[in-house]
View 1 (spheres, one colour):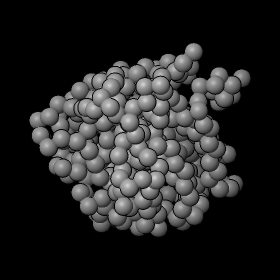
View 2: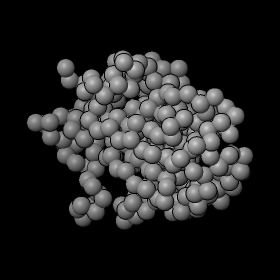
View 3: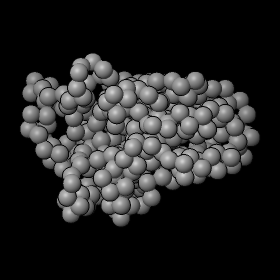
Length: 296
């Protein structure tokens, strides 16, 4: 039994979503080793949030999620946090205190590599200054086992834009890529107009999609909306992640974007993280959703 079949049969996940990424018939053209692997995506931990009616375990949920990841039968190749690591505050001292606490907590993850993205709660009030002090550049690239990863920053600009400088940086990076190369993009906000009335969009996200469109095997993972959502822009799939602090309602399902109240009869309902099983040679990803609490 391979690792993917183990997760399917063990009943650990809630939803398994297979995303086809196109033909990718010419895998050898990359001239890099292409191997299956998996990573874990966590998002919107909002460390520092306080609201007993929304999450009475605000101080414990992140730690429980880390324990759940550490309890996975096979360790992931890396873990990525797709933004809103901390909850917003106007106090620069408190902002750094929360980032320091968050950083110390996630050191408990038993993985070799952890990747971080800012969310607007981390970065929009100081244009990412504190985030850079603790976690480095808010946009960067890395390569792993034949997959090219691009991390975008669509939160440091308070207008919810990528910005011309970063668009130029992205264009220059993509020009070095083969059109058949497997590419994964991480962002905090959705790059398409999911529901702009609730700030669920990126002002110049269409320009990012335009740059990515010539590449046949692109997938986007993001956070921000505190729920699972799957969307296609042309051949490019976009997958949002659940939150580790509180869920939000479906886009446009109510007048205001308010957190879903805590359900004492179903604690941690709507919270979770995901495993992403990357199969570059077959050009697909197997996505498994996990609850924060694993019940025997």
